[in-house]
Image 1 (cartoon, rainbow, N blue to C red):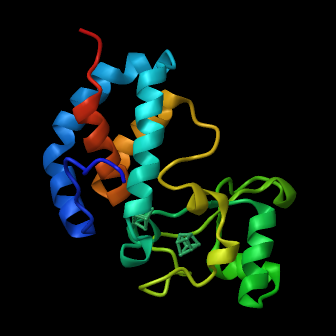
Image 2 (cartoon, helix red, strand yellow):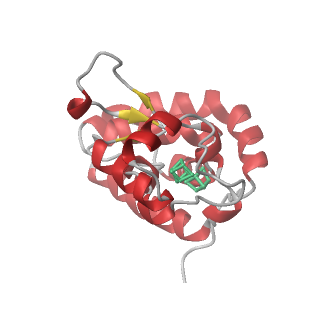
Length: 180
Ligand code: SF4
Ligand code: SF4
């Protein structure tokens, strides 16, 4: 049994309100601990990793969907093909109908695409292409290849949208202080 969570807000509307109210304190804390994150401080990284796992297990994303409604993920070419297949569409038709290029002048085989926000593949309750969702959706509120400092900054940034990010930041903020 895990320790009881000192502060836990699962409701996305409450997270939006409390996240806005706590943003100055959260960013002030980020400024304090960012040097620890940049140095790869093992206590901070362990606290982030274990708290993120505990909080993620306690939040039901199917009752939230805020990331799908408020963000447009990047989609690699192979992911676009997988999404098109999941929808039973030709890749070209899917790209023209659902995606926009991140770099309009780039060659098609080098292109990265963006889904718009809110995501048209969300039906209001769930992702309609869950098994084929692109990497940023799978990783959120983390992102692949981030440094610990960037990861921490992303969690603080998304603490106004995502209950997982909000509760992770609040719990780690109570446990880890910056250098004296
Ligand atoms: S592809 Fe699915 S998981 Fe990703 S933003 Fe759209 S609805 Fe959400
Ligand atoms: S990842 Fe965060 S914002 Fe997205 S559905 Fe889950 S709790 Fe909500």
